Image (cartoon, rainbow, N blue to C red; front, side):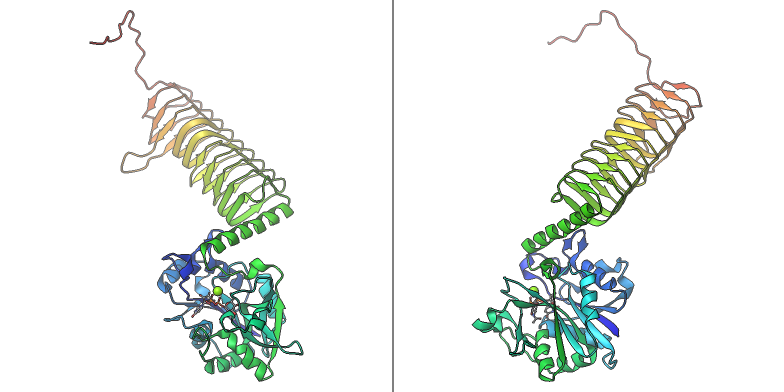
Length: 460
Ligand code: UD1
Ligand code: MG
């Protein structure tokens, strides 16, 4: 069996009230179309065709950076004349002579279909059968109904706008996802008409054609409704986002992660978590995040593209992006850890500390109010409150190198490029702009003078 996957994504999505094409709206950090492409890719085989129309260029640009881009074949539907017409646009890229070829139709605005469900549908499909993914629902309004004859065999799909009152009572609906023999589809599409309530070329009309010529038709019902839920407006998108996040939360809980409230976590990417991880409320994970064993994360934390080693504690209000946090470290509350930060084991970054492009050695601490940028710090360094690494001269960035066992007194300014060797001590309030040799004290401030009997200015 050979497979072609056709994803329909040409619609504008008028009800989204947006200038962005519907399928580019994001859910769980990825576009809806991105989720569908991911599911299609996870099938492991098959050529992926995407039919685009409204905002075609914007969609292609968005996917040019995607890891799947090499496997995507684009077809354009200039005018949106219906789902059948949309599939026609992809046919020139599909081998319709090959009797073993099957075409799987997916919708770009149905983002949560599991590849496992699609695999199941394909497993019961063969190049002589038309297979339809269906849903039994109490709310069939607006959807295509599955019409069955007296023997229970599927005889047609009728759209809401074309359905009789009796047909509208049918609770078995078409999800839109179908696996269709390519040779037959090509022939059926040739005789598709548009004399119906919407004046559209309905893909669903091929079902009656199949029934008429005695082609086997099978239905597989999904149990999880969100898997086949389409998005037409932002309310539906928001509800599906929540569903998606609840699914993520359930998986984490099952894997042994303790979530203080499964309704208050958002994963916008891939999260891998070790055992005995605890996550408090309102935590957002973006991109690729790895949490080791025993990691504890406080409330209102955002972590993006970072790796957090075993037994790290992230305290509330902390923002971590593009960083590696070493085993046993403690970060926050209210710390901002920016890209290129590497904290070695047992470091401590406290409140209102910002780091960027900084490697901080084992056991080192910056407990309060500091900026550490473009720096390398050795082990057991103590950065006092209010210390600023002046890494930028307005044009270029420069580096600060600090050895082991260095103590930087509060409110100091380290003007890069500068090196503080091992065991140096910087007096509080210093401005350091030349290198400090090892085992010495650097005092970079005017000596204090006390003027006895000095009088404050008086009001004139
Ligand atoms: C379609 C099905 C209906 C099914 C429902 C499930 C048809 C005729 N009807 O109806 O049986 O219950 O989906 O959600 O197939 N698209 C194009 N080009 C077009 C028209 C649509 O690319 O010319 C794309 C849309 O962007 C969307 C998908 O096809 O991704 C479905 O289109 P939509 O207009 O939502 O179809 P429905 O009327 O909902
Ligand atoms: Mg729809």
